[in-house]
Image (cartoon, rainbow, N blue to C red; front, side):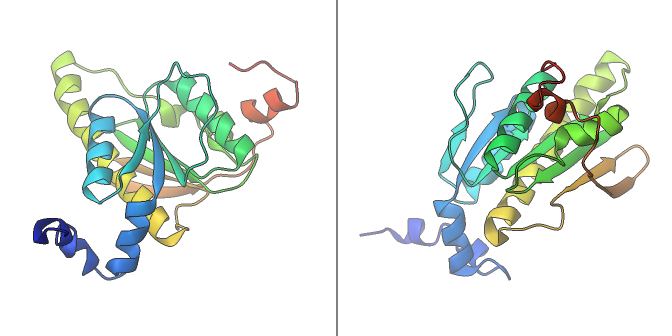
Length: 210
């Protein structure tokens, strides 16, 4: 017999508008693969687990096998090469993926829906390389600030992932959501297919994978 504690574990979530018992069931049955490291990974993993998502696989950057068929790939890594490799896998398998990365004084999110090819993360990177750079400051400021920003980024990425699982769609699909804490700015940038996309060039045999 199920204990009252387990039965009521997610009661506060099921009373939320737009969630309910049906939405909670979607979270509990969803499968997500999570790529990342550090406090961003920890924050994302904690948020997803506490929402009831139990089918959560942590990806190893050294793992060469392809992605498993899951509902969503969540990428919160600082490793740009790993991020690009995952982008190329999801664009070839038509799996939905949510990418989060640090840039400037804040972070950005990009949601690629279940579609092959461009537009993709590298289309945006080719057109906006500065959106992926983090300024260098004093060591103490970086240590304290980056830890907090990484945790915020991981939590926000998990929140958007849960919304995608709940609805199967998102207003962020095909867009980059950029947030700057220094300037207090938050804006969305539509991602369009780029003729300079390295992923597309590589698939066409025009250039090696960087």
